[in-house]
Length: 470
Image 1 (cartoon, one colour):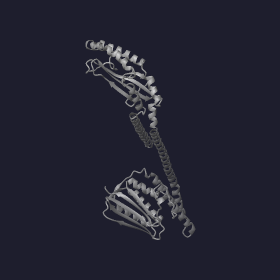
Image 2 (cartoon, rainbow, N blue to C red; image 1 turned 60 degrees about the vertical axis):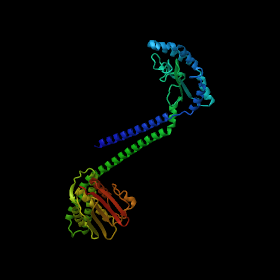
Image 3 (tube, helix red, strand yellow; image 1 turned 180 degrees about the vertical axis):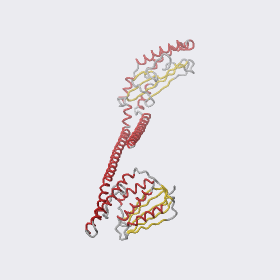
Image 4 (cartoon, one colour; image 1 turned 120 degrees about the horizontal axis):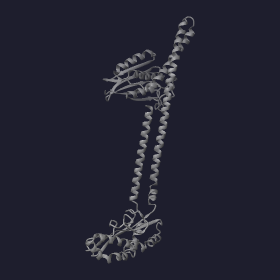
């Protein structure tokens, strides 16, 4: 069961970490996409303005319109005849003329000198690259309807790029973020054409630039993941240490408790035998020493049994039954009063209608004994008074045990329910610091609530809220 709980803890920790990493990755990815979609090159406006001025009465680049017209206009009658008579021959001729036109446009392009000149003139980023594309070309035989001709999906034409055919430049990545200029030019006259061409400008290291802009976000995400991993590791290590320490403590208590019980029983038997062999009149001093041995041996046995009971408390099978609390409480006080000194008074007070409650009577009895013992031990008053009050409130039953002892300081109050904790008291009393730890464990096992209030030199009040809705 122990190994299984460790495995479950590790699995939950790993799954939680994976979820965090996935969420962080998704956030970073979304941030990158947002930055990419909003990416805007500041040089685009300058390039667009100067490029548009250069081709104001032209297409693609200065002189390109003459080349395009020379391949299309003289052949318009042939294209029209083939289009309506032999579609296969029409497409074959288009593909042939398309290749020739693209070859000549590339051969005579002057953008490789125009674009660097714009960059130098306006002192733009020297790492900028460009791509000039023909994206679409259609023919119109009647001046109203256009027939797709030179475009990438025409049979027989193999474009150099998904956008069409690149005429000049080396930029292969094209999208709306790096689009500088897109033009569609048409005449709407018989035997004319419509052409769409575009200029794209971008940096080769665009992704790197975006990542640089995102670097603080990226580093923060990595730091948060590392912090969580560190916290997981430290928490798991401390949890394992605490678990190991608790197991060692319990094993040690069990071991010494069982080992001590046998010699203690032997001492008590031997002590009784020694007492029987000495007559009351023979040696009064020896009888006093025998009485001291018996008292201290019984006290030692009580402490060891308490330690053993604490170590087994977390593993106990809680057998609960219904009891009438006032009756159980009066029975406990009646037995406890037999050992009280004359300067100790326990005053019970039962208020209202108290319902039956479910509890383990043995554990409850020991718990009350521990609270009463503390109220008497840590008390310097000439008249030690312990008030016990039971009353219903908001469907629950409240049990208050209040003494007039030395009280508990605020610093110690935070730790009094810890195992083996013993605060700095003005009363020298023996003990292992397990009494209140036992009280807290019993309350937890029953699903109740425990609260404590204390004022120095005035006393301490423990309140147990018992769920009365059964």
